[in-house]
Image (cartoon, rainbow over all chains, first blue to last red; front, side, top):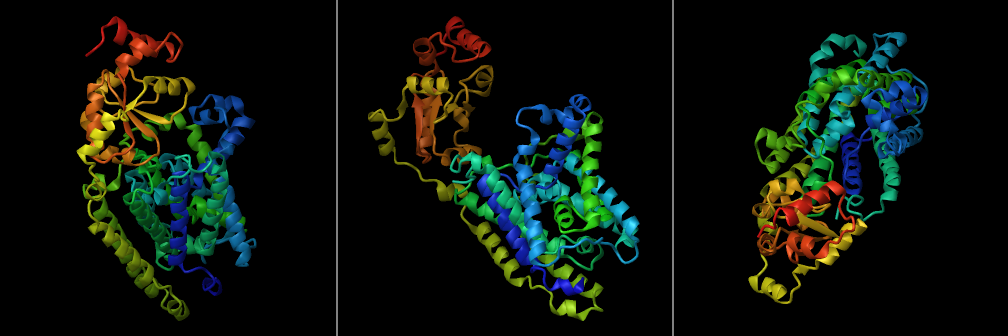
Length: 171
Length: 373
């Protein structure tokens, strides 16, 4: 991994470029970036079309049944771009390939279970916070929203608070 | 004037194309920065790699500074930009849950998706987990409703919540970011001291950080927005307009617009909030005459290319609003000739302009109940 490190972009340059992408998003469309929104659209679509009876009984799925359909929305195209851009960059940097990222002291199977659990919590938390690290924390910070910055502080604050107890996962 | 799509400068049909392009940029930068690696991401919590903090904080203050300057120069109408609403305990709870998710999973949704498409198997499970988490939220949606929609504080800004000025908050945030860059570099050096090669190739933060700090300080010392943009119009000029009758808009023009559902004219109801609450013209905004100079409407008046038409019951209040706004240098403001009274007694016919309820109320108000003024 250390060999690759030099081939990554300077993080401050990357941050600046990401900031410009975010700024461009505000200038062009009036909203910031997001990643968990498309996951919600996917859940709405899959559940809404495979179990319409279940979905129609819940207010959470109301968007699915109203008009345009959630999959055609802005956030879905943004995420399609995210996938394309990530793949493109990985291909250009010769970083494509199947592997499991894990700390030195954890077995692969355990790592995969923890990844699943982490995703589950992130998906759940992003619903409460109305956005994830991108949509609530980063975009919220750019417009100086109280809610967004509060969410950001909670994500990283909680992370630091509990990091010690989960250190075997990573170091 | 930005934002380009909500202002109608770029065709809304291109919205999805831009979404795709912005997404490509987003994904490309995340992957280039190395954020598709859970081990690098988790490093921020254990001190061996602060790449997340560097990228995240730099991006945040860059976009923030850009927006502040664009807003200052009148290039972007922040009234049309999405400000994340603040639902107090929902935001706190969600953030805390995501903190657990970050430590356990090693990714956040954006980086997890990028990692998954570059082949990280753990990230694929992380993304699957996100979908399950969202499904769980949906399943218990009604049970969560109180927390989710409770304590709504509005689309509030963090500097107002803390009680300091926007420019000071921006400068403080930039200073905090730079301090964090310096301290985390020291921590990282110490944690990784065995690997000297890493230390020698560490990225320099001085140029970008101090450039942005300089911008922040410039922003701090810019003259207040009001003073810089307050181009008072000479009374003679307004008088000329009034004499020439250029300040009036014919009621028929307004009726046509309402009938056809167009919106070239922005209608401004200058009556009180109570009167506005009873009924108003379709598409009108309520700015009581006392609030015309209120700073929150400054953007509204200064931006946008539409003609703004004041109306009240008669012409009195609208004229006051017109003179106040004109003197303040707001361009393209007008008065609805004769006000609502004339509109209802002379111009409106029986054709259905309003929906029935609205119309009945309006009729009562003007014809049956007696016309005011």
